[in-house]
Image 1 (spheres, rainbow, N blue to C red):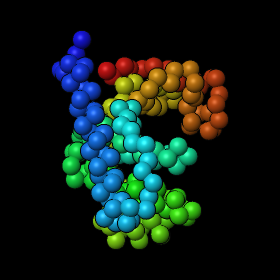
Image 2: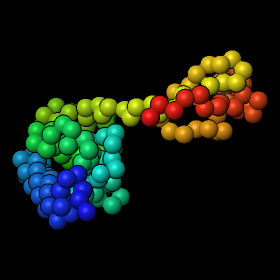
Image 3: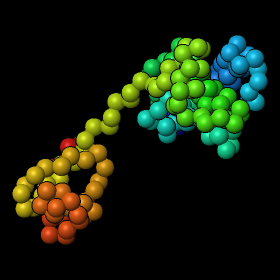
Length: 172
């Protein structure tokens, strides 16, 4: 059985190489910009992370990198940007400072050339069109919502079973 046209062992080798690259980048950014002060996190790759480039879990001390994001935007310069961004969060946490996108975060990001935010990932296409049985207003949805929502206009902003949206069209 193959995955994305590759044999399973080839996929593992590629993942292992990418993970080692993330770890090397962390070490490089840590040494170059933070004098090696930051404890190395557990580095992971995520195939499920679709709306962001990376994230840190400050409780588990993990840095998680999005495979879909970097497959789309690149495993070189963009990965370096993501790593720098996530390392700032780790640095601030290790210093017991607020680690969000605050003034201090932005000062450090400007100093080391890290972006505040990642590039936008394209949204999944709409798969369904639902309709109000009363006013015929249409609502597009990416996921199945049948029976759980009513028309906001007809039900005055509260769920009302008299105006439950019904499937009008399946788009894909």
